[in-house]
Image (cartoon, rainbow over all chains, first blue to last red; front, top):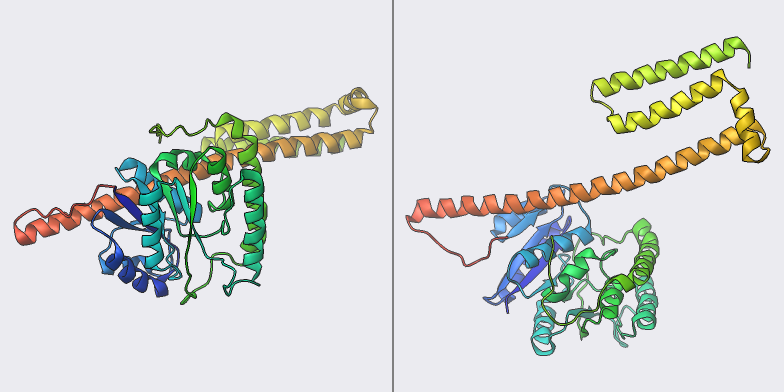
Length: 243
Length: 134
C-alpha cells in the first residue's frame, strides 16, 4: 500500500530542519513524503529547497484546512492508499507515525487519530485539554464513537473516505471530521501517542483563533448533522471522486 | 421638502449615477455591481422628486411614519445586498484557493522537471527517482 505523509507548514523555520531529518530517516520505500508550505513568510520554503525534499508551496496563505485538502487532492490524483498528516512544529514523534501506519495495515481503518491525552499525562489541567475533552464528549454523544483526543494533528485518512472529507464543511478537520465520518459508517481508530514540547515558534491557535475555534467547529458540526441525510453511507466499494 | 432641496438632492444623485457609469466605462466597477447601485439611486431619485410616493408606500406597508418606512426599506436593501456580497466573496475565495492550489502543483512540476533536466545534463542519462507526479 502506497502512502503519503504530508506535513503542513506555516512559518516553522526553526523546527523544520529537525522534522525533515526525522521524517526522511523513518519513511519506507513505498511511502512518499510531501511538505506543503502554506505561504510561509519566515523563509521555511528556503529550508525546504535547501534540504532537497519534495514540497508544494501555496503562493498565498490558505489556512491549515486548505493545506490538508491540498494533500488529499494529491492522494486522489495519484495512487496513494492513505495520507498521514504530521505537524511541522516538531511535537510529533516518528515512532508514533509508524504506529499509526501499522495500525492502518492491521485494522484497515478509514480514519486513525493520535491520542495525546492519557490519565497520567502532563496536559491534564490545560485549557486546551478542557476544550478537547468537551469536544470529545460531544463527539461521543453525537456519533457514538469514543475518541479521547479529537484535536490531534497526527492522523491518517484512507483514500476511500477522502472524497467525502474534501466535500465536508470543516474547521481544521478535528471533531467535525470524526463526527461526519462516524455517521457515514467509516471505521475510526485511535492510537496512543506522545508529544514533545514545541521547540520554537508559536501555536497557530493564538488568543482570537482559540476563542473562535469552538464556535466555528460547533457550526460545522451542526451543518454536518443537518446535511447528514443527503450523504449516503459508505459501502466499502471504491468511491467515485470528482475534482 | 422645498423645490431647492429636491433639486440639490436630485443633482447629487444624478452626479453619483454619472460617476458610476464612468467607472463602468473605464472597467473599474463591474456592470452587475453598477446596475444594483444605479437602480437604487434611480429609486431614490424618484422618491425625492415625488415625495407623495413615500407617503403612499408607508400607508400600504401598514400606516408607518414615512421616515420609518424609508429607514426600514433602506436597511432591508442593504442587508440583502450584504448577504449577496458574502456569497460572492466566498465564491471568489473558493476560486482563489483552487487557483493557488493549481499554482502550487504546477510550480512543483516545473521544479521537478528542471531538476530532472539538470540531472540529465550532468550525467548524460535519465535518473528516475520513482516518485509519482503530483
